[in-house]
Image (cartoon, rainbow, N blue to C red):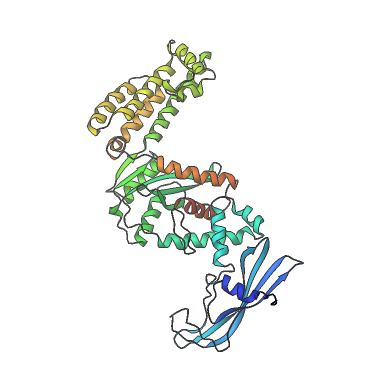
Length: 414
């Protein structure tokens, strides 16, 4: 009866790490007291390596430097790779440290470990990942930042023609970031701190670095903020602007609410009715419908403002052509201006001042739906992390979740 063949752990880990000649696993040591696995890699005597700068082959080893990388856990145990890393002598580039196949240059983590961190970062806060795997979150953020930056530099924006812009916040009510979205591909292509006109200058500069002509951007979907209008008009004067219908209806709702709040001071019937006026008649519950029926029988300014709002919504809901939209919007504008409801009249002026961008919707059909979807994902991550103190980390997370980036570690966030 033959003896039991002993497992050669060094050969096993050499194969597992996919090492090729002249590299091999010299030793494997498990420290049971601290719960760590240490893998020592070496190279064969007389080995030669390619120059990492010019790729010149068969360069002799000049000296070695001991380096360590954190690898994926072996079961629940931390695992480290150690390697006396060769520096080669190149006649063209001088003394250079070779690139190792398991890690990016300058990183203290293996590629597999970094890919694991990136995957986790899409589903949980980085601080929690750090606690889970026993690393400082600042080190993990450097991984995320580096991969996002590299992937952004490789992203192709040559076919971008239609963009949307919206703002979001890294913490509740402050630290705003403006997000530019490729509307055709539903992906974030630029994110920058602030929500003033300068964010368009920043976007234009990014396109220039990628040799994308600003005239290539032919359609921009945005809200009616003066800062966004100014930035878009100055940086992309040939692009057609479409003002998002959801922001327009929201502004109409704000005007309606101002009428309600002012009238409520004298009409107690309007108490606790704030959210009632946000609904369309067909979406009211039985109780809300009874309340609305009772209110509409009264001679209330709020009811008049509500009917003006419904009429505007009907235009967006039923009109398909630009010419018909112009006709109906003109009629609606006249009604709103004659309403004797100051907030509604002010909103009507806003419509007039943004007329071309509002009418463009009926041709472009662009809405903020795609931006809102991305923003929802980003804000969900923000809430899980309880906000981001560092705006650069927040921007990196925006791209990780919404940029559809392709990473060199093999991951694709599409």
